[in-house]
Image (cartoon, rainbow, N blue to C red):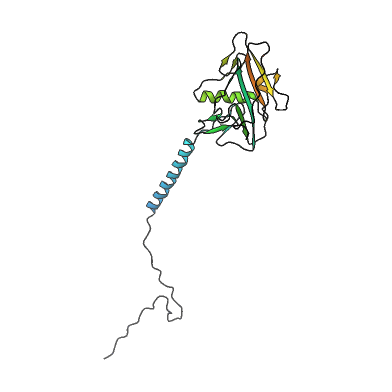
Length: 230
């Protein structure tokens, strides 16, 4: 009885009768649905866009400069020196408000004008800026006025009849003294007080008096425990 012979099909990767090696059979994986991937990418892009939009619209608005004096989030240290301002009315010296030029208050400041006052150093103007510009008393007075308005304390005028909270009465005059800390003591200044350039350890005294010859202002103590490090 004749036996039948079956011919096996050549396996992938084995040699055929002609001697050529057949390419291996590649298994196809499951198809990845494209629609969910596209939707996910769109949602991610939308979330990023919304985040950028929220940041751009909710970030703090920079505080505008006043009389050319910017207000920065941190105190500057590149240029740092101090001058003093004394206001004297009928022989009584008035202390400057602490925190002048410090927006948000000294406890939680939001920015510092380059000209400002710390409560720990009464009547001392801190000049702190990243550049070596010259600053004047007029610029400080503008910062004081703006800071006072923003703090809800009202305006601080400075003109022919007003010196901060004082209104000159009939017969009263404003006398301005400048002590340059050069050993000469306080000298009468006859020009526009706003033009006085602030310099290191300079003492500017605004004296309101009805006297024809007012008493010179007291010397400022730069050597006191509070001011010795300035």
